Length: 331
Image (cartoon, rainbow, N blue to C red; front, side, top):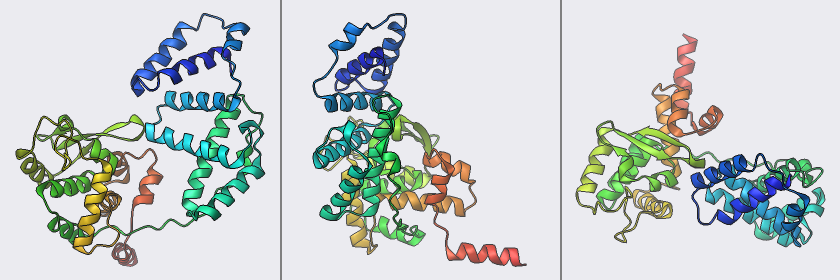
């Protein structure tokens, strides 16, 4: 990597804790433009040499993820997996080979008893780092290239029926909880997105909401009169000085994604619905919209999926749908 790029990344890393993602993007562009006509000499390059090359690599990678616009949670996950591998393997990052990675993953799964799906997530984080290191010119060839995808079966839970959703609503303890479940189902939003909605994002006239999605990608989602009714009733008895749409039981604080999960789990237990969690409402909405004839491309847009194949993966076909299609084709 050029000394100029290393210098820019170092500045981005230092400013990361005090600037927002869009501000970091702006700073990166300003630095890139401002330094374009300047040469960074060898002396400058020597100034930013590190005694600890691993620390240097980690800082450069962190800066790269920031510039790419990865969310703080995603960056934390990538860096944590890198730290874990370094602790277990006890070798410099540049010297780790394919066998070291395979041994580390196998040993970690054996000792921690983690699922293969979790292990494959760790593998993806490691592969992402070494792909970046190879592209940036820090290593000749990524040792993770030879690490094959870890096979695992995804247990696809069925979509909730209309009866189950109504049962969940009946077993809510408050109008706030009813508003959350109805809104979460109708918008098809992720639990983190629901927790991130602000009052100013809601348009009751158009029945729309601005969803702040993964990777800083905003989109518009919709809700019906039913959700609007619950939301309006909830907001009538709530302190509207709080910017978040949903307030936690601890007055004056926004409801977190973890708080929504806990609430939904309690609703599931009271309603007798096994493994009820927020994601099932998202899966159910996608399935129900496709069943009712909404084009897959439109459902993709509503769900905030980059690829239509992801939307297909969420769809849960039912035996009734298969029977209907079969009888219609057989006539």
